Amino acid sequence: MDKKMALRIVIATALILVIGTVSWQVFITPNSKQLAISKVEAQEIAGERYDGEIVGTEELSEQFIITIQSDLGEYEIKISRATGEVESVEQIKANEQPKQLSEQEVEEIVLKNAPGEIKEMSKSTEDKVEYYDAVVKDADEKTMIVKVHSETGEVVEKTEQKPAQNTEENQQNNTSNNQTIAKNEVNTEKNSEKQEKKEPKEEQNKEQKKEQKQEQEQKQEQVKEQKQVEEEKVKNITEAEAIQIALNRVAGEVDDVDLESSNGQLYYFVEIETEDDLEAEIQIHAISGKIVSIEWDD
Image (cartoon, rainbow, N blue to C red; front, side, top):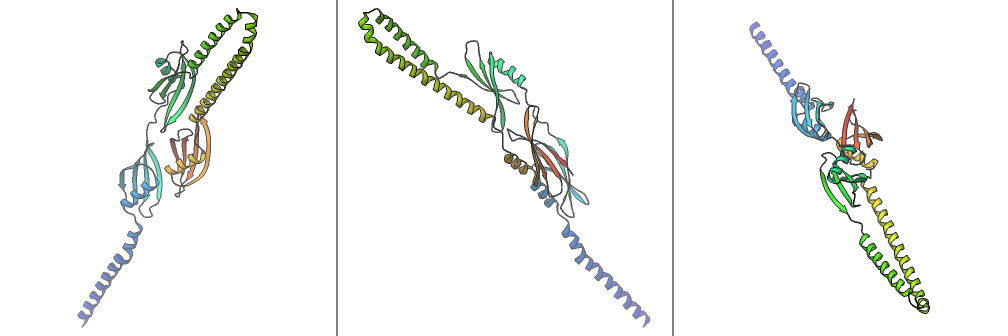
């Protein structure tokens, strides 16, 4: 009887151990697995929060390290395996930003392609690309407009500007000269004929003054339109547009927006706090809307 009892005790103990092991695997281990995120989920979290291409994923015991390539460089994002929270974001490699030519360098390029005197220089933006627009007048009083790429120095356009009123003014001057010759011939006639010509002469003078006034008004209108075109070329983006550009790059809540000048250029500095309590300062060009840099603070 003692041996049977001992055997029963051993069997009962083994059953208790088996039941305990199964309970641990069924009730405890699955719960811990439910808290952990997968590699794909970690990549989705990184892709949703940060713009760029995922170029690498490293799996550690407690976290995933996601490497993202963006326009500004490579960033390393550490995500907790247990909670899916972003633990840190660090730039590990910065892309070289394109160099902007100085105005002096652009002037040299312009004068090589259109010798003369630069009367005016302005900047314009087309499809997020900046250009210099120079107005050059040569020794023959001809006016050339030269458009130069602000980064490469390539001359993308060179056109001659012809005054719209020159031909019309020459015709009017010829008409005026012919009228003067006719008047001189009339003056050699009798006094009675001179008297008869007075009224037509006065009418001609009035007509000439009227035409001159119309020419001046047309020129003033052209100058006004030219100023409007130039003002539109250098129009800055609004603060709201700068905020939207920043939020498109980094999701979060905007803390502060400043407009500052640096090296003769205007930039917006937008501070954004993310859901992970990280703070990003995004520098945006105030004319082109291009993101220049992103700085992160814990």
